[in-house]
Length: 486
Length: 131
Image (cartoon, rainbow over all chains, first blue to last red; front, side, top):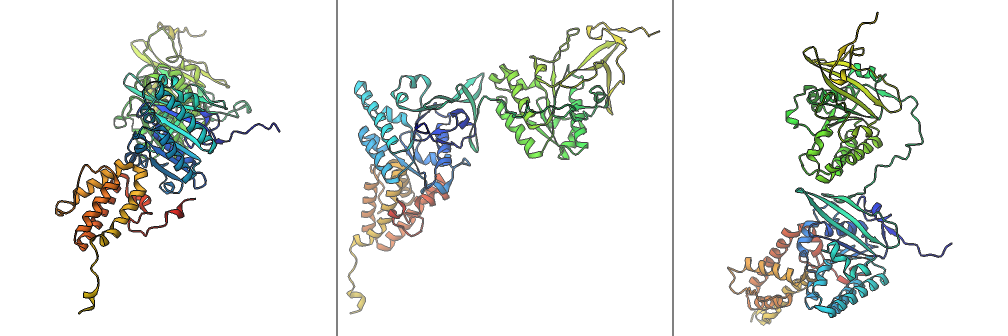
């Protein structure tokens, strides 16, 4: 036995936040929740409070001069975490505005202590602490008063064994020069960053004494259920290097000729990137892929970034949507975060039990994404594919690009390196016609055809020639017919 | 002489005292929660909505604390006809609770006021709820 004190961790009840904190909040710690107005500080405090508060672990919430208490109660109860039954026996609100108006910090401190002694809380919140600070006298005297007040508050709450939170409208620059940060054991900073008219909410753990926390800015979202934090981590796949799929199960793609080129279909759980210029048949292939699943009783999810549902001219797809075999996801937001996309995808997969996913297409997703995700599309795609891989679904993802013969490319932004399989589709001018060709560029872990085959889009779908093209130098843009073998 | 004639007529303050007690409990419960400012705003608005046909019910925007408001209310009720005072008290309390309910919802209002009797439930000893 080491004899060292054990820091008990409190689970915050905010999805994702405990990961950033290094396991949870340290009991009896003194944490500053800082951020600009509207960044979600009060909501975060309430979510933590309602998750932790019980009749055995009571919470005292002091309101000061910020949001009027009636309005705070009016709005906070809209969140699903607000448990009305806890108000009274487990959660008590106290307004300090009148005490603070007197401008006497020691009076405020004594009032806080009276309430603490009366209610016996294990959790104490002061919202907003900035308004406490602003009542300080000017000059050195005021600074001394404030430092003394914070020191006393921190020390008394720790002695009282209360985990304490100060909530305040601070920016990063404010805090660095503020005595609060010296006294505080932890600091959680919230922000909403504006970039090209899109706002993305962020959370940072700037300081957390006694435990290894995750640094950096992480996305957060506020929904009807409160705050959800998205640590910048990939979905874990614990068995990734423990199993070997020697002969992976294969599933039909919905195009018989392509299944033939894949030597029996797409390996289960693979993500196939389908790349090619506009009009080459990527969306039709995606529909066939979902249809092949539906014929076997599988459910599918289609994420479209190209056209509105009402304009789906693909009768087969509409029929599958109407029949409940396929769920279509479409974003109306033009400030989409990857996290929203992944949440929607996860929810749809879980709700429907989908085993197939189509994303159409990665070349248009940038139109919907908030700038920071658009700047680094590869990371956004990596996170999406990681989620799909963890879910075990098989996915077909399309990517388009301007055709630029003879420049042969497989995707934009090197996205092809992230996929398990790549199917390249492209046009070639043959004897006065624009003809379509496809080839399987790669399939991880299994062999496949390397033939370049011509195909046609007909009423029956995509019909692929059963043999390689007889044209040479097709990809150069100047094809020549191969002389017959003698 | 009829027996009733022998009964002492209540002093003006006597009929006002029991009416003001629920208000005092309400103040003790709500002022710590929503501040003097919140209580005063809610009470003054309720009194303003109720006052027009009752000239005797004074509304004065300079009363900035719950103590000043409730002292004035007690004086107003004491000077009024006992039956009218009781009816006005009921209406004013109902209006105040409804105003609060409009802001924070009926469920939370009932929860916060359950110990005051203002929502119609009997008053409990507050000490029972403390540890």
